[in-house]
Image 1 (tube, one colour):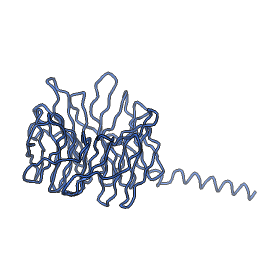
Image 2 (cartoon, one colour):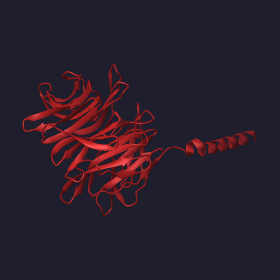
Image 3 (tube, helix red, strand yellow):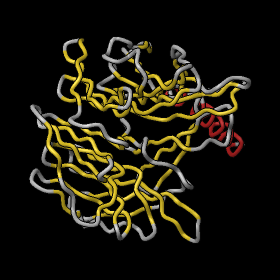
Length: 349
């Protein structure tokens, strides 16, 4: 009899645990309405400054060509911004960053490059000193900005110091800069295609040098994530017998550590540090009607799905950003019978 009573007590405790308030409030992804653009659309970037301000960039397909696309999150809803210079002209918007109290965005305006700056609620533009064939990437911090690309003479690294532009040289053997990111005006990282393969470069305020990072053999780099703590995370793909797998390299201030989380061949450009301290990034979903996200916390990788989307045949989060205690995503969803249009999702909040 006592044995039966013990079993019953255990079952009651187990059931209570399953329906406990802690389990009931586990955060999940929810859908956020986004005003539609002219499909098909392409999302370039997303950046947030706390829970009440985020900006998403990209371009839409108008009848006469590509048109820039800018959306603002105010903490409760998405709205489209068409007040910036060149909003009604051909072109596209690229990376968006917060620089002090301002918002900076790279803008291809009918082929010419410029930096949009939003200060005290108003937009202005800083033109580039020359037009490039290709605008590959952009980064900005207080006191400095960089645009990398190519013209008819080859690789160009354009540096803005707050008052004017100069052209910087790179080490011998660098053929192309694929991306650039900065922590301060004297701590800038880039990944380059060189005569010997992919190489990490670093600017120390005086000169660009090879950072001497030993990347995995036969690999490339998708992104470099710099954090105020000094931590650096590199994400990319390594190829073995023609098959790619994602790798992550983390620098803790003293040494590099390489891991291979079970992400398949995931493009890591949208990777962010979440409010829980883990790395989050969108991955290719095995469900056509739901997005999918990976959470990498040390050696542990888990996955979560976005909300169900009726009649969706492809849901693609393109960028993630931390908004206070939440995560915000921005991307595209293709509903059966229509072209891809905008979607946004939030975890927590």
